[in-house]
Amino acid sequence: MSANKRKRRIFQRMLLIFSLTSLFTVGLLLFFISKYYTNIKVDAVLQETKAVSESQLVAVDRKEAALVAMTQEIYKNSDLMNDVQIAMTHDYADYIRQNIDNYYARQGFYSVDLQSFLRSYFTYDEDVIAVQLVSGDKEFTYTFPTNYGKWQPFFEKYGEKKLLQSISRKENVFRLGESLVFKQVINDPSTLQPLGTVLMYTDPGFLGDLIPNNKSASTFAVLNREKATLYSNHTLPDIKSENMENGYRHGSSYIQTTEEQASGVFGQVVIPESQIGGIPVLQWTLFGVGVGLVLISIAVNFFISRRYSNRIQVIIDGMDQMEKGELRAKLPVDEREDELTLISQSFNKMGDSLNDYIKQVYTLEIEEQKAQLKALQGQVEPHFLYNSLEAIRMHARLEGAKVTSNMIYHLSTLLRYTADNIEMVTLADEVNYVRQYLQFMELRYQQEVPFFLEVEEPLLEHPFLKFTLQPLVENFFKYARHEEKRTSLTFSAKRVGGVLEVRMRDDGLGITEDKMREIQSDLADEKSEQGRIGLVNIHRRIQLYFGEQYGLAITSIEGQGTEVTLRVPYTSQGRKNYVENAFSR
Image (tube, rainbow, N blue to C red; front, side, top):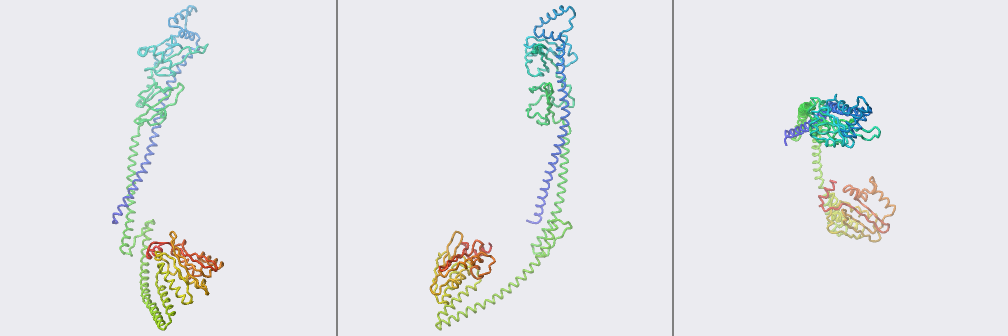
């Protein structure tokens, strides 16, 4: 991918991320601002509609209070109360007859007349259509219309029977047809038992007169405790009781509920969103402001990202020059001390250091080549030594010194194995080296040492660390060999899980307990310098190659013999791969 393409992709990603972040932030901010100012506007309109709804409830309370005041007037006037008792216990003819008898019995003008009282009491209130007095057993009914024009159609529509049935309603205020009815019970002053009921029929238009023209689109409703609608200027939508709370949004409208009054009625207002003026204007204004802020933010992000992208491109160009071999390439250092400036400074320092390093490596390679030439020249000397030893051996053999000839042969073989600069060999190579060393030592001490090999054929090809078995044989000749009798050596190897265990066992003198404690201490002490070509050396070499979990262990019983165990990781790889993996670890 070219530098320009990389630049464009990074630039586009940065611009996209910044733009989305700005859009999200501004959108979220404007959303909350819109909600905040909308709520303020809604609360203001709700307060205005609440005042209208409360005025309607107050008007209903006043109507009921007027009916209560009328019944109290009846209680206060004993003659009027007596007239009511007669009316509630007699039909209209008996009631008239009783009134005439009372008139003559008093021998004077009878001033208390129930009919005149009920007809005249609400003449001042144009909203009252009629006043009706119904006995407690609903046998006798007296109706006194104050507005015949409105009462006559109402009476013809419902009739007396249906009107009487309405008295059984539980609420003191209820709706019957197009009328709003108020109910008040009259009790017998002597028995306190219900004597009858006074019904006041009113025209609910007085509630509509309280609604201002600018609020006419809202729905104002008055309901009683049974949630029956007493008045509504528009059809009231079906609203669940749990949603009848102030500010609840019902579709595109807001709901407001006014607290219940003493008369047992409460108000409910449904305000359409169109009545809350200014909200669309506010929303469009905020939308325009949001779009402008987002565009400004994107523009600012564009110029900032482009400026940094250009600086990054300069760094990339410098890297490309370095990649092509222009090690003297330098990046301009900006006066702004930011991260990109630090990168440029570090790049320039890296170029200088790389030049110095290349010079050093080049010098070292020349010196190494010189050393290799000297090493090749030095290889002549070992060949001269081997040829000389071979000439001496053949001369000794011609003179009949067979033992001397064999010793020279074994020594030459050992030197060749030693001179081979290889760290890892096969187990078979190491065993053959031990055999040669053992035969050499037998000729030296003029004593045969039986050697037993207990190894399966495949394990002989297992990779093994060079010069790990010969020091064990050397220790055997130094400390374990009996001079008076033959002492044998047994070499074995086996696989135990992922570990190869190689054992060297003898039946020699053994090791004392004090000496064993000293050897164990040396093996456990990483800083021990004793036995550098002996047991400790072998143990350290194995651990350095393969890890701390591997190494050497020794057991011995004085007078019975010694056993040394070497533990290395088992592998099925070849020697070359095994050596590479060992060094990589």
